[in-house]
Length: 168
Image 1 (tube, rainbow, N blue to C red):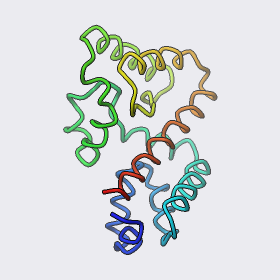
Image 2 (cartoon, rainbow, N blue to C red):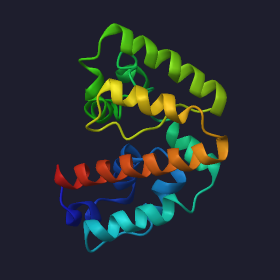
Image 3 (cartoon, rainbow, N blue to C red):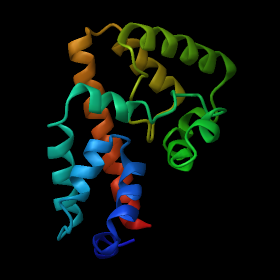
């Protein structure tokens, strides 16, 4: 859809589309209230302004709307509204060997136990091995640094999803 079509959606339909891009209700409601936008660039800029002004609880809400990296089996069940998006974003795990998927599951569990939320990475264009390497490096971060990194990754995911929304 074009930016004009997105501008012209009724508030409820547009909010539902925005929630597919980022699971934080506060982000989606705040951004929805800023419509209309003149360009996708303006939309992306405002999206980031809102995202980085939110608090940790809002960020965690957004993170909770993502499947764990490599957890393709539970994707459709737990996240029906964004399953196709996440499946495309995580396409790099489709050809991963069993050992890599098992290592991802172990590292994901460690990360979640340490930080209290799932590992967030912009997976688009990354192989399972690359994501595992990133996860293994980031799981050693301190919590204050890691939440900032996860937020930046969520922002990248949201941007990709907003761009795809406008393209489709």
